[in-house]
Amino acid sequence: MKKLYAFTLIFLLLLTAASSGCADKTASDPVSESPAQAFEGKTLSVCSGAGLIKPMNELVSEFENETGAEIQLHYGGSAEIFGILAAQECDVFIPGAYYYTEAAMGKHYLLNESVKNVTLHVPIIAVPKGNPGNIKELKDFATPGVKLALGDPKGPAIGKVAKKICETCGILPEVEQNTIVRTTTVNQLLIYIVSEQADATIIWEDMVNWGEANGKLETIPIPAEQNTIKTIPTAVSEYTKEPELAEAFNNYIASEEAAATWEKWGFKPCGA
Image (cartoon, rainbow, N blue to C red; front, side, top):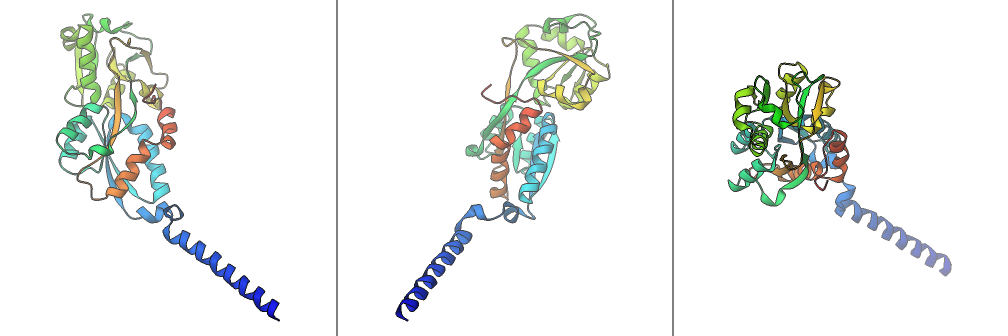
């Protein structure tokens, strides 16, 4: 009888200890809590460069599915989304070049410790299929009669980059004479080329993977000594009202998990 009593007592003690251990893990281990429960019903405003639209659409969809959050995306030229950030209407800021992030940090619009480098942005020359303007290198941009479509230096990051590239090559005055349009987003440059309204442009290399470009354009690499390769950063706004969600999204965009999506759309890792 004593043996039976002792066995029963030991069994009850073990059962209590096991139950207590599971309860403690459920209550205190953040991993056990579903991410969807943490951000369900919460909304985040993300300002992104228009040239990032393809990977960003996929990444946002994946993040929403995993967390239950709603992401409101605002695409535009880097200067345009900088204005949205300045108006305190942006939680996460992802421009097409680090220049705009650096400027925002200088004005205390961003949490400096949140800045993360995501991927590289590599400029290339794009021409319509068949290359009707016979463009072979940057110096051909200076040929009289060539029709160029370029980004506005005061608008998208590619506009400022194209201007610097042409300055480096020593052809800026001729290029300005040959430019028939200055666009507010890099996406518009692609339209001018595939519709053969311009002989050449400078866009981001990753845009060659877009369906709109498929079979409708040709590309020419820019030599490294003439090129201006940019880094795409992401950062959390100083004014965000959802700091935990903003930090989670910011980390996700720059994570190894997201890297596969960036590379799928032709973006190169920062270490490349």
